Image (tube, rainbow, N blue to C red; front, side, top):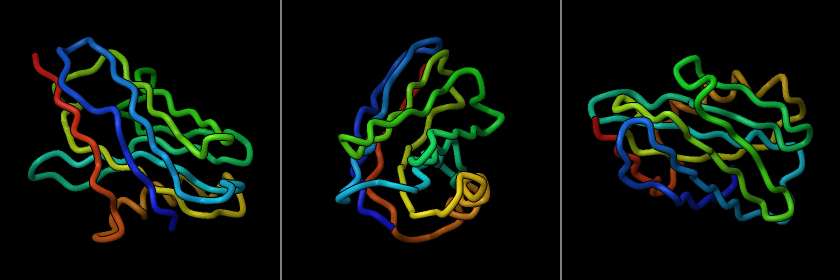
Length: 131
C-alpha cells in the first residue's frame, strides 16, 4: 500500500462538478491499481472507480458510470476523479488508495475488497452535494 493524499472536495449544488486529486508517495507507480472510494454517514465504504496505472484500464461502480471519470498522470504520481452531474446521494467522504497489481484484471476485485479494509486510509476529502 502506498501513502496517498486526497484533495479537491467541496460543496456544490446538484448537477455541479468537482475534480478530486490523489497524490501518491511513490518513486514510480508502474502496475498499480489506483482507486477512489467513498463512505457516507451510517453507510459502508464502497469502491467508486479504479484505474490500472500500467494500461489506463478503468472500472466504475454502476452508481457513477457515465458521470464520473478516473484518470491518471503517472509523471505526477497522481490520479484524478472528475465528477459531473453530481447528486445529493454522492455526498460522502472520498478516499483514495493504491496497491501494486500484476494485471488490470485484478483491479475490479481489488476495488471491492479494498473497500472492506478497516485501516490504512488517509484523511479523505469531503464532497457535499445539496439539492
